[in-house]
Image (cartoon, rainbow, N blue to C red; front, side):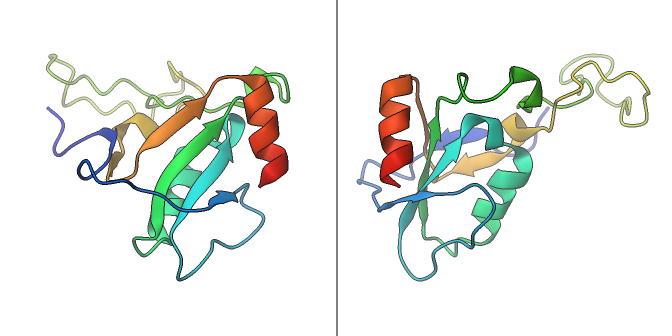
Length: 137
């Protein structure tokens, strides 16, 4: 059984808004102002989300993920699942797979195990809309 909450969502029904800020890891995050992070899907990883969550002081209002499938090779993408099975609610729940030489999800980084409560995440599927947002930020 997982401890705590996993997934994303707003704190309540109030609007969460801020200017769009394109984040690819090469620049520092805005300070003192609310913002919505715009991230390419190939950059959406546990490391990126940790950076956004760890340095936002409550200013991060959401994450907008852009469709990047036509931009990069899919082999470069991380997978939101863990690298090794976690075994929740199974006899394997207490087995550590972390030292295995055969990861069942080689690109896994465990992002789907993060508690993003209060930080809604949305995916922009359309490549034209993604391109427009990319050029505008």
